[in-house]
Length: 381
Image 1: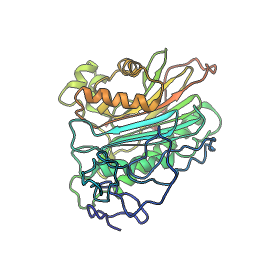
Image 2: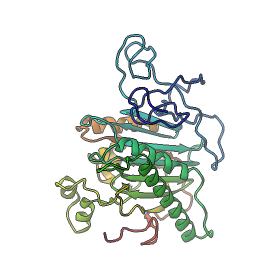
Image 3: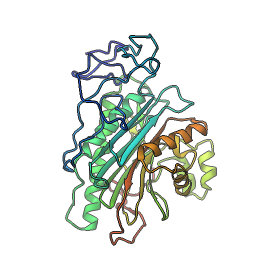
């Protein structure tokens, strides 16, 4: 199949073109989603079942149709023009939201200073608050070709690998960490494969993207990172923590003794040293686990957000300043904050709410995986 709008190749049965966002064919009639939840622009509607789904089976519901015209409410055709008033609809790829459950939500926006949105996200959540959530955020590298398509394909591929609960390993703490790190490494590898699959084999500047994934299971967070998208743990009252470690020149300068502010505002501030894509030399992520002991927010985001509030303390302060308790409202407020600061890059914020009493785990120090293994500490080069 080919897209009637841009002519790009489209998989059989697809409802939207992943290149331009145009609708393919006529959508089937589906029940309306709850008013508080937004449709995914590229075909993934949020999970809204009132009963809890098994952690091992969190299927996406059927795709939904395109949003109505913002001017008159009429139907928007496959060419993105309103069939009633003729107004050109903004691309839904430029700004979209996901809320797979009331306690998990994300917003992905192109920002003020960018012509297109090369960020992507893919979320999963169990219906019961605090049960299980998956946050995947990918930032397409802007100087590569088709990174917007690649980042979306990569995020979805990683989400599918993480759909099942992380394995328990041999039952020991070290075994669980190693087994979880292996699955997160598999998710990164799947994202890399998906990016390569949508990359023109003749491209001299192949698509590439950063990768950040966080899995919340009860009171344990496991994360993995490639590039400079980030994962934060922001407790309501305790000390906020940046969980992930950037693969970037700025991070290398910080590790060498340079002040964070100077490194992150210098000429090499956003030069990354690892990425996903056909020309990637290392797509094994770094990561770790953290046992949570208090209520708070798990946040995965792109540099379009953290560029304006990089430290964990600044990020926590900005989140608390939203004075909101709904993850969708907080994500929107964080995106609005970044745009108000200039919006120089694409912006993604994905959050999961954690609400439970202290479970007897008092160690708030992130536990990195074994160095040199999937999810381990960065190695030279």
